[in-house]
Length: 119
Image (cartoon, rainbow, N blue to C red):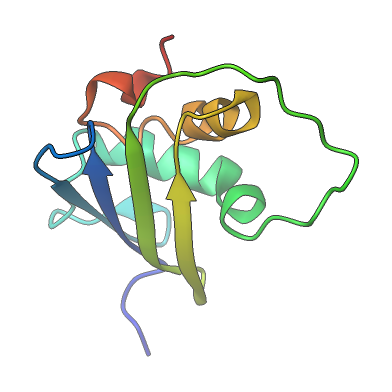
C-alpha cells in the first residue's frame, strides 16, 4: 500500500522555450510530508483537498461556457495519485475556464509568475 494519500508531481513551464520547473507534493493523513518541494506545502495541500476531486476528475459539462480571454503563456502538468486515483491533468491560462482552474490550484502550481492567477 502507498504511504501517501497525495503524491503529485507538478511540471511548470513559464513560457514556450523556457526551462521547466518541477515540484512535488506528498501528503498523508491531511499533513504534507517533509519531502514536498512545492513552495508552500500546506497551502498546496489545502487547494488539492478543496478542489482536487473536481479539477483532476471533471464531469463533462456541455453547457459550460468559457470567456475568451488570455491569461498568459504559462502551462503546467500535474501527474501522480490523489486518494488512490491516477492524476494526469494539464493547466493553462488560455481562456476564462482554464484561468479559473489555474487560480483554484495556484498554491499547488506555485513557482511561475502567473501561478497566483493574477491577470
